[in-house]
Length: 261
Image 1 (cartoon, one colour):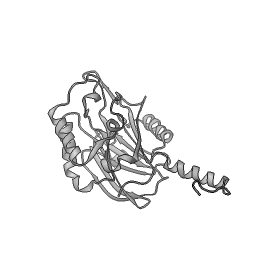
Image 2: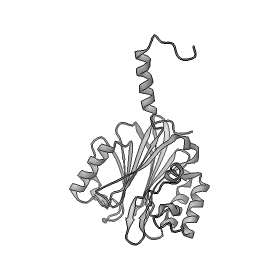
Image 3: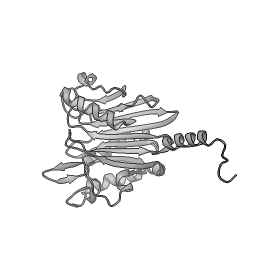
Image 4: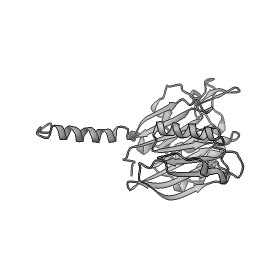
């Protein structure tokens, strides 16, 4: 079954949330962006400190953390969507978190990944193998994959290595696609700057081919409080607006007959 509801999903490597002022800045940023689901990477929150991350209006917050201030991922779900949690999977190193649930009786699975700096393609491939039985066409995979998937995702246009090519083959076999590159095949935009490697797009959102017509809008959003930029995906963009517009027009022109009658 395809996703038929409106959702907006944001993903961002926040580069640490230990300082209270940083958590406040991020919380205010989330409120301005108004995502249905917000996925954060590299929170650096210890397991005992996760309660410190609070955002008014996003009451459901899930974490995968370590006992030290390294890695860490979080997923915040808006109170405005009726999300019912069915299953949670995560690792003990704070590198990935998978939430399965339903919204208005429609199943949705979100996977949030923060891949390590070294061996990222092989690490992601292992995660995909581990959760293969849990993902389907209603799954969205997001995060800091620490891997440019194409040469266009590097300002240097350097070719991808063998490990990345193998990862891409795995993604394709699962019928998932890189949504930014699919919707913007010729656009050169990046999410991270590295002195060693130049500007890169290593943050990604992957979706299932079956829902390609639902993925109407994806963009990169600049961030001044992190060394990464965010990515935002809108699913069924404009659907809620279309319903509201139709209702208003019907109410205002109730005496008019529909077109074709």
